[in-house]
Length: 249
Image 1 (spheres, rainbow, N blue to C red):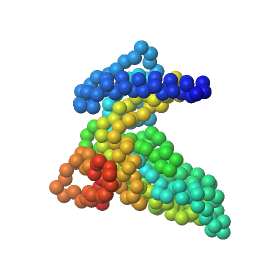
Image 2 (cartoon, one colour):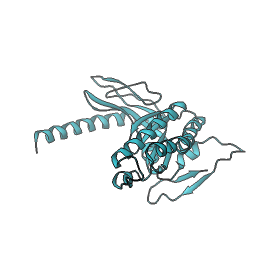
Image 3 (cartoon, rainbow, N blue to C red):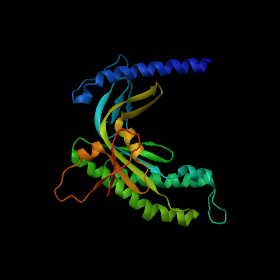
Image 4 (cartoon, rainbow, N blue to C red):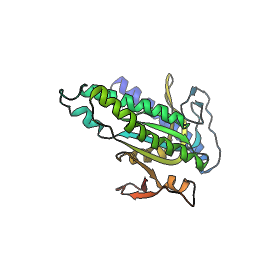
């Protein structure tokens, strides 16, 4: 084992020990109680996580979130399969770079409009978070999802068609609700604020549709009830995953 590997192993173990302490100290917060763990040293970093302007190293807080994951469908094929040079005006790598740039800029503008924040760019999409202290806040996440699909169709696709003669993009959007631990991950000098929760995992698994918005069962039950509501939750097959998913229509 090289020195780098030894150091890496040590750092991973050290951070896991911190994570274990944080989790144990916020365990009751996840059950609606408030416990905060403090550590002998403290590093405070700015955060993109909505509702948490700063996050402290060695401390965990719990928030209620709607995770929003947008996935560009068939993005791998876009990188590995070329388009005839007689039709496209961009190489394979250029194509992916331009497509993701357009999608990401669109996402930033739309997500910010509805008071959410993009916390991670994933290469073929992004993760955004919306606070969910009240159930009516689901409308922000849902409206953002609808607008993203709308603007990708009406603005992004025509632009990449005109500039690069590229085919239209399709995206899948997953929405999921849960509590999440907000903490800093990493080592001194290289730390990142993260929200770690089941909503992120579920939203990622739900983002596999084509120009569809999909939600998990927790978000369905969290959704405000309306006697004349026109929104329908159509159950979809989630395979071996241990939660239910719904297409919103």
